[in-house]
Structures are given as structure tokens and as C-alpha cells.
Length: 188
Image (cartoon, rainbow, N blue to C red; front, side, top):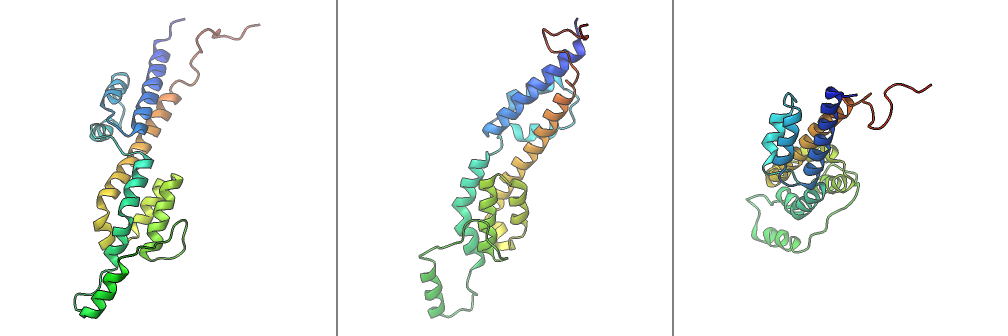
């Protein structure tokens, strides 16, 4: 029995799975998005995904590496001495900067080092939305230093959400589709 509607639903599901896989690799996904657009031209999130497709979105591992590389700079941005500090205090502050010690893991506290530790921990655990919420609680100086990271994190979160919805919609449209090689009516 030929079921063109179900065949299209299966094609959408396959194209959506390919799109998800391409996005998860963290590279350009224009080809996979174009394939999905051919079988689902009315999909509501195509324009948003298209804006991310050329550059791709960073993987969780890439985000973790990016954040780890700027973590000390984020903390340092909030530990700047006041401009009217004397020469002796500047020398002491400068000496403190020679050794960087910062907390790691799920650390309690509201200071920048604790927030940075929690963001890093959330990234390692794959809790991207929680990492973004923690980032929002950083002081402005720290946000300025890490704005590129936040843009990348936001793009990954947006892409994850859109592709999950796309895949769920595509798979949902295949529900009840007959499986190849099985009868469409129960045998007696």
C-alpha cells in the first residue's frame, strides 16, 4: 500500500535526524538544513536555523574549552584595584596576579570565582541552560570579558532547542506510519 503522506513524514524524520547530527558536530550544517527544508518547507524554525547554519554552533566540549581559557580573565576583571590605589598596594595586587588559584566544581557562594566554578561545572555536566543562568549573575565587568562566550553558548542552546523541536515534530508525524514489511491490518 502506497502512503505518500507517511513517506514524507518518514523523510522529514530522517532529514531532521541528519540535521541534529550535523548540528551536534559543531560545524557548518547548511547542506543538512537545505535537505530538511526540501521535505519540510513550512517548518517554523527554518529562518532561525539558517542564521546559525553557515558558522555552525560550538559543541559542548568547545564551549567548555572556550570558557576554561577565559575563566581567569573573568575573575581578574572583577578584581581590579581602584585607580587611586598607592604604589605599594598596586605592587601587592600585581604579585597576587602571579599565581591564579580558583575554586572548581559546584561551589557555594555569590562571588565571581564561585560563579565561574559553577559555570565551568555546568558546562562539563552538559547543563547549558544552568550555565547561562549563572553567567547572567556575573558582574558587568566579567560579562564584558566573556561576551563572545555567552553568544556562543546562547547559539548552542537555541540550536539545541530548535533541532529538538524539529526532530520531535518530524518523529511525531510518523506516529502510526506502517513499518515496511508488516501488514497494515492485524492478522486473524
